[in-house]
Image (cartoon, rainbow, N blue to C red; front, side, top):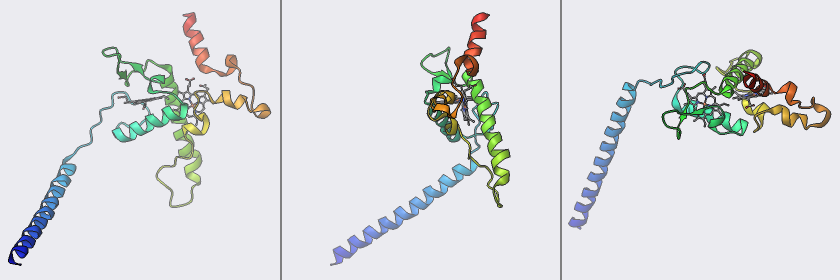
Length: 173
Ligand code: HEC
Ligand code: HEC
């Protein structure tokens, strides 16, 4: 019986020690976070906020890619130093520049045409309009819309596709 009690005491002191230690490690963790200053590693943001966190940027980029049904390489070129990696800061691809206009457009629609008409208290940000609302997994929404019979003008690459026109201009020079 005495042995059994000793054993119980031993067990509970280990328990107390574990709780105390976990408290301590929790505390040090908090101190680390307090001293942490958010880094802004971004080199070439012209539309998104300069101090956007890596998590938020990753989330947005994946969302763009999924909405258009493309990979990162649709807007980003391979790095010259290491072609296996992408040079995310480069503005070489016209798709990236077009995407900047698209980001501004959706922000503008949300901020100026949806948010003001939300009831009080208004949310800080609204995300009613987004890329997938128009794109639905394709790069050019006009293509699937033109398949909807008489509901939309017929897709005409000569007239509608800005990218074709830019490429044609480039070929001329
Ligand atoms: C539809 C086009 C598009 C796709 C697809 C896309 N991006 Fe981007 N990305 C952009 C645009 C536009 C910017 C610049 C935003 C700005 O100017 O504020 C950017 C910026 C970035 C940056 C910041 C570069 C810097 O330092 O300035 C990173 C990192 C990035 N993208 C990663 C990715 C990854 C990873 C993927 C694939 C999951 C991806 N992107 C897919 C359009 C795209
Ligand atoms: C109001 C509808 C609408 C919304 C919202 C929209 N787009 Fe677009 N987008 C279009 C149309 C239409 C085209 C094709 C016509 C053109 O490029 O001139 C297009 C073309 C593009 C292209 C060029 C595609 C290519 O390679 O041919 C990119 C890149 C793009 N959009 C990115 C985005 C991103 C990123 C978002 C969200 C931030 C977005 N779009 C939101 C309508 C929209």
